[in-house]
Length: 96
Image: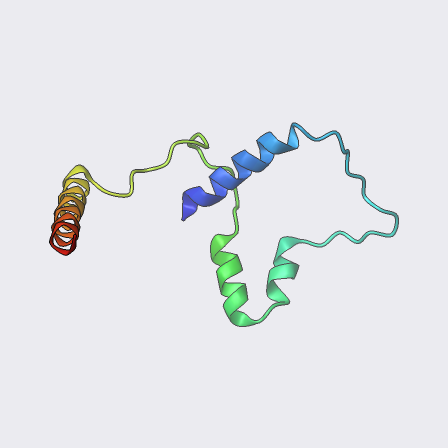
């Protein structure tokens, strides 16, 4: 989950380079800190927001994500999928 925000930041940052719109602060705007926004909510939302708040940019590059499975687990999943495919093909041959 920690790499999701890095990826989202990378995508939005690259997309922002394509935009020509330059945002400006409207007259009468009030600056709010992130803690004030978080603390004004109910507890479950506050807890989630505090846990997911980004305090500093990541040290890794935006496109370096860890693999979800190790090689043994991935091979086991592929073998299981192949067995399921064989069973489905066998059922198709029996019915047709």
